[in-house]
Length: 323
Image (cartoon, rainbow, N blue to C red; front, side, top):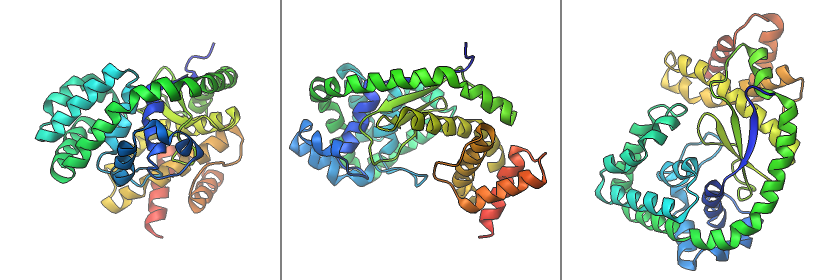
């Protein structure tokens, strides 16, 4: 039995949020978005597309002003019933309308504390996001809260019933592979680093074709596009586990870096995770990474095999700083 498994899960609330992004063409077009555009009222579809810039994200480029509040926190919470969405959206509307985040955040304090294990200062950032929404985009924010709230019932009745069978089948295929892979143990043995949770969940989503993939929902959970092959999804999840193992090293070093160096930490983190995945699992690189950094890590390990993950990370930051 695997001590710390990677497991595939299917979550309605996660799929619903990315469904809205797809039909709203928030950062990407897809056949899914075109197919289900009529599942959202025409006026609401117009709101999503008109205010798409407030919800965008991807590839380390940062978030729009409402991305955390209306994409990632709802997905993290997996708001999978009308009652849960009603509570969240009405609470958020009140908070943004008044510019007073305290009561809303108190409703989700446990969840935000858990999310804070992955995102530093998560509670404070949520407070600030609500205050900025009140000051900078109050009316669009209230409008989008309503869209998220009232589009769920049609999604649940018409879209989710169509998408669920294929998602469930893909989860079964993926879990059969996961049961043989023991990915987290191999990562820990290969790097000497420790994964800090009992499991890593791959939340399968059918709505994010052509959009950002492997989106973080905390330390131990990611959203992955279900249209990839099970082998490709597992490889992607393997990379993401590596990102988690490196995270404490990155956090520790961020305190030593200048603001300019800290901005480069995302690509150092991603490239180092991919290099370590390839060296640990004996595979070729497959995901977005910086080629010069990858070569640097290879050379360091060849000539200084005792170099630690922290040594590699620091060298990567210094290398990018010289470019």
